[in-house]
Image (cartoon, rainbow, N blue to C red):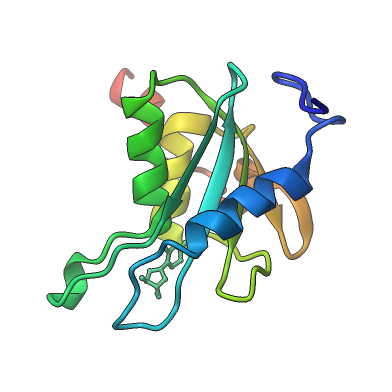
Length: 137
Ligand code: THU
């Protein structure tokens, strides 16, 4: 077990990426032909994942991150600490803009994302984010 709850140095990104690849292999993407898988660590040590699920009514397709946040909430909630996303080749992929907002809700600015440019906090991938805090001002 190399993963340290809430830590950064010992996080096993390779293992997290493997979980994302496994999820990607379960994607339902017959319309785009673009399967995506995601995985994240939760602050209590859990791992959650998701894959995209498309629909014949194209606009109703669900990004992989939708499944991830649903699993997060339905398995006990908590905060996302580390996140990765892969394409059909298993290569690291950036999450789309809408999904950065989904991730912000459950991980905040400090959530660490594995990106093609290295590991970056969500604050750099979604600057000046709108979030739950705005609603309480
Ligand atoms: N997709 C995701 O699942 N997550 C992202 O962050 C990027 C895009 C999916 C949506 C659609 O099913 C396919 O990739 C092509 O856009």
